[in-house]
Image 1 (tube, rainbow, N blue to C red):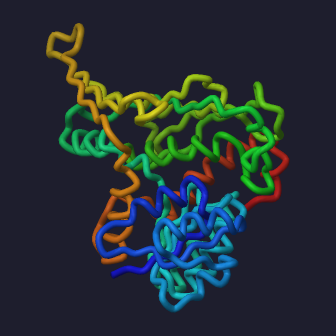
Image 2 (image 1 turned 90 degrees about the horizontal axis):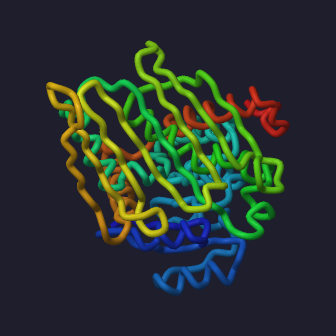
Length: 334
């Protein structure tokens, strides 16, 4: 049995708790909102701890899930690692590259597993696309084009994500990190070629839109990415172009639409391609699959779950955009 503690009892903390599988058991919950912590703990017959500092020191906890605001992630994860726990943190794993780097150093020193929640890797459309790419379904990779956006809600520009001292940045660090991570997971290493951030609509100091152009170190592959919280109708569209065809992941379920994997296979004579569409209706299984992968990493098995160095590279790319765009909060971040 693996005994789990969760720090942060908001939306994601609840999803993580419900994704615990097999011999995993939730032992304790901590959140600055005592009522919220109590509700999650009661649902899973777990204890409530007054602070995360107390939770990570408990002898009856083997692994800690950190699903807090970005400003708490690094301190909590480092303390948990130093206390001998395995740790799963939510993307982006901190406010800036230095936050992420601190965790990398701590995990190496502690000899404990540290992984990052990038659950989109575990959506079934992406899992199947990864397998098809490895089998050569679209031939050599040429480029990736992706859009990810939502419309937010009234008062969004007053929530914690709008404050760079808490969040570390705006939409690029929120949904944009998912896009960068997926590009690297599917297509290998990428560097920033060009990027810009804009605040078109929301009254906040961080960006509500980010645009990136990435290029592989050898200059062969490119990626064109747009992350937005002025999309109004939630959208997810991830296209992978190869010499012999294209894969398109459309939708993520719920408000993003039914998840689909569309396979466009070029004919020898070119012209309109053959099209094969696979749909994945039903509940989002990515959280369960990612937790299984976390357990696999603890057991020493290779899995698709994101490593802390993956998160570090994604955050470094985003922060390079911030610095080039003159974002004041990025000036002193390492």
